Length: 307
Image 1 (tube, one colour):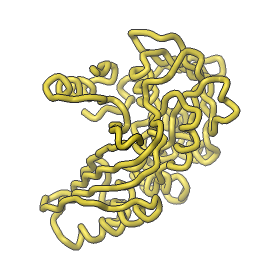
Image 2 (cartoon, rainbow, N blue to C red):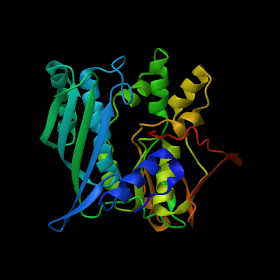
Image 3 (spheres, rainbow, N blue to C red):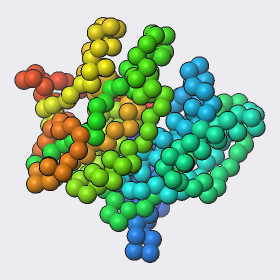
Image 4 (tube, rainbow, N blue to C red):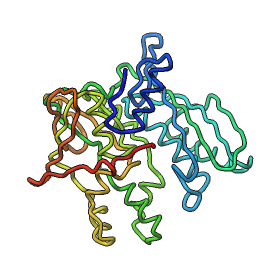
């Protein structure tokens, strides 16, 4: 499966890898493996100091827990139940590794997962790689959205991005927003419930705008957003810092909410916030946003890119 290049260098890089290596099923939050009649989902994530986190505002335990939750969120995005984890940690002291591991342990306990392996090595900066597995009878892929499906979010976006802004700029108060960034929790229960009705799903690790593009590209369709509720805490802090809350809601990443589509006949079983509708199938996927009769033009430079 060759992925559309609409998101720039990241997809171009993935396409080069796919073209040169034997691969199958690339393009979802997790790979899916048939396992004795059940489906095992598996995903891996890497986290790098000063790219994904900073010791300026994270404790070592906090880093471990946050990285684990971010990795587990991929399981939630498939509508699966988490099972096992492998962890590799590189840094410059055994004590740091022990502290990071205590944070990971919190997530393992929270989601009833088992640590089944990993590796440790030395490096000047902290590097963490986490592989997670889960189980599902019918995992939800990104590619199932159909014309007329409704678009939902499990809850509000933008809180984590605003929290990071407050932290970086040493603005006091607003603990709820800061914790949205520092202490996210993977939406496993929500994912299991949503999986009963969803036609496609993804988590909002890279921000809502980016993930809308990911869903549109995977399902080869247009997506029309006509509602985007803003959390009251985000509205309040944006008045304080004189920022547009819509900027955080669209482009702020790492909320780890679930973005999904559902056929209208199942809408009564959907949870969260309805934000739009899936448009026509197309070879040129697109996103259109119209809020309060005003068109909102997405800024490609603000859409999260890994390169």
